[in-house]
Image 1 (cartoon, rainbow, N blue to C red):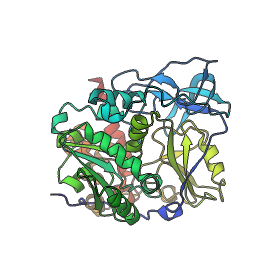
Image 2 (image 1 turned 90 degrees about the horizontal axis):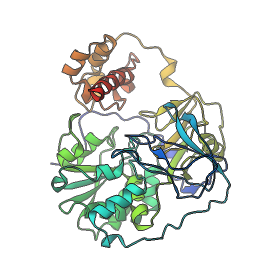
Image 3 (image 1 turned 180 degrees about the horizontal axis):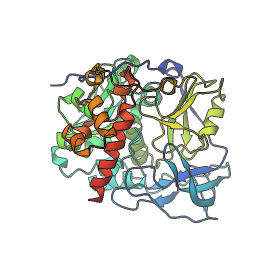
Amino acid sequence: MARFSFRGGVHPDDGKRLTQDKEISAYMTLGEAVYPLSQHIGAPARPVVKKGDRVVAGQKIAEAAGFVSANIHSAVSGTVKALEKREVPGTGKADCIVIENDGLFEEIDYQAGLRPWEELSRAELITVIREAGVVGMGGAGFPTDVKLSPKNEEDIDCIIVNGAECEPYLTSDYRRMLEEPEKLIGGLKIVLSLFPGAQGIIAIEDNKPQAVKLLREKAKDEPLIRVNKLKTKYPQGAERQLIYANTGRYVNSSMLPADAGCIVHNVDTVISIYEAVVLGRPMISRVVTVTGDCIANPCNFIVPLGTSYRELVEAAGGFAKDPAKVISGGPMMGKALYNLDVPVVKGTSAILALSKDVVAEKSPTACIKCGRCVTVCPGKIQPWLLADLSEAHDEEAFLKNSGMECCECGCCSYVCPARRHLTQTIAGTRKQLLAKKKRG
């Protein structure tokens, strides 16, 4: 039975007031465009251009190098300047294609060979989505065509669109729901056509009443689509919590959502599916929220992929005051930045500049065994214990105490009075164990 919520969670200041009423504005990059070959889960893409080649917007510049991989397309016209390592958000350096932008934004013919999507077979629709390079845009970057090709496709009965946007400060999905509801519903109808036994749910937290009202109105004549109003609580948009809140089904770390009959897509991803299938447009842009108390004019931009973070900050008026911390993404699960000369990638949701670094203000102390981390943990585990086991390098006990069930949401660190870096510590051990498992 659907409960529209889950056990645990926290209620941080959402900070959305800074940009929730700011309409999406288009920003066309002025400088060079940088495209990391790995901006998705799986194998890095393989370049299909070389230094000196001229490219146009929408042209494929790197192809998927495996089943779990994704194509990459240029969002600008210009000349391939280099294939080299560059800084990328949150992960150090990576192999990138660098394009000298000529500012003309010449494009391929998106309509060439385009057919009505209703005439396409299941295999053809998935091929179109794969060719367009669509990946999950909520952060993980899982190739969408792979997600739409589960082994048990006949068991899929629920497609959930994640409109919760529970991460503080982010409003990109909210604005897209308000400004492009037809694309969202159209994209969901395309996904539903791939799974004849499925129904669609657009899941939105109740702090977004305008979006709930608008989408219910737009979907009133769609018998397979309903809009669920969820309780506002972080991390309501986490995949496992979202599935439970809407269906009452549990998903653990050894399962995929498809094992529970569900597929979950981010709002931006569903709109990208629509644009790929109906408009013939590959994934070459996304909406980015530029926000925080240090940004002069917080706003929502739709920008070409490859655009520099520094450019976007300047387009938002620059820094009104020196930030103590700049984050790629939101404050709970985003990655701290030490360099703004990094490109917008498919998973970039926000640039957040804050005047206070609350994490650095106080040093961690010993655990006082208050149990707050256990109370708020949506994974029903004991973060304090798992952090202790991580620090002791006791991987066997870490696994025995369900350490892999951590979703790294940050709730435990948020409430810890001792300011222990619980999520970071647990995440480090999880990463090591996953790497060992991958090596066999």
